Length: 230
Length: 230
Image (cartoon, rainbow over all chains, first blue to last red):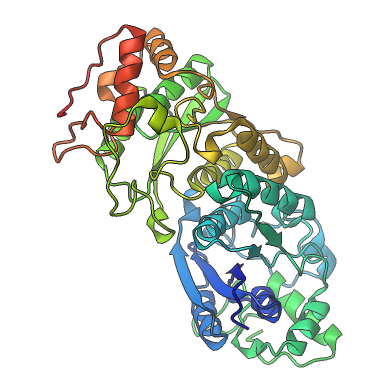
């Protein structure tokens, strides 16, 4: 741990990105965690990210405030109802209304700026193409295109430095992610997944994200350590 | 003018981006101008951008505040002296200290988010590979990579919608840009180019940007309508 290789890790405070952080640590990277405050309705996520970064003793954690509400509607950033009680096939089918335009491109761009400054070798992003097949910016070909862009975009790239976009969760099911995380010592009681938590931060249990999380723990044969209101 | 084709135009308030806006207008796009308040030392640029957007009757103008100072040093955003009195060959040689990490990637990412929401066909960016050959993100291959990324990144792209990154200034000299702008009716008295203006907003005349601008007007055989302090 705390090697000389550096990585920027996109940390939302959710189950996937917390597992991602544990993977980057296990690969001996010095971790620079990056969290975005982008007007998401559930600010509890930011608190989770801060607590997780602290508990995992990352080298540095930055929270960047950006305004994605400036551009168009999404149930995650605007005043639109988050869908609930959908089954897995409904969630996987098509692009959900929780889609935020160009979100991952904006997140990766900021990560790239920091990575260039740090001379980091990797950017870790917790995208997943299994549960969220409807998100165009969660696909492998999208990430390959970003890596290609990154290696043309920067001063370091011109000098021959190559950056790698790491998305180790991309082909894993939720239960595989959970099993991997548990094997790496992740404390999932600290993670938040809900799109629509109650005022106390308790997960609703019925939004797409809660449905996938609960199913993941069930399939992994493990008990989800967080409580649900619904 | 004000056709149904839409374009997001990155407008800094400088000579190049103001010419760019005139080009997009001349091509019958409905203009959505996007300006970034990124902690640049010369806020006068923001005022110029607002005045130009108004004078050009753009359909909408948004100013997005982003914090590029969070990542690393640049003479444009940090407390580093802006170089002065350099000749053209010194400016063109190597990557200048006014380089901001991943700046154009972050700008284009926001433009992409807005373009997707608007269903815009183009994003116009005023990069130039002649005067700023040292900036990796001002090269044609970089812009091609971004266009490829953009056409994988969005919901609209998945539905077959193709977005074009337009950089009509990329191979023009400063004098060619000025002649083109004048032919399109650009009022260059409204534009600001200086990296280091005085407290009243007057251009220094000696920073790289002023040197290139003055040389451009001279080569174009035209009088620069702005005043310089040095």
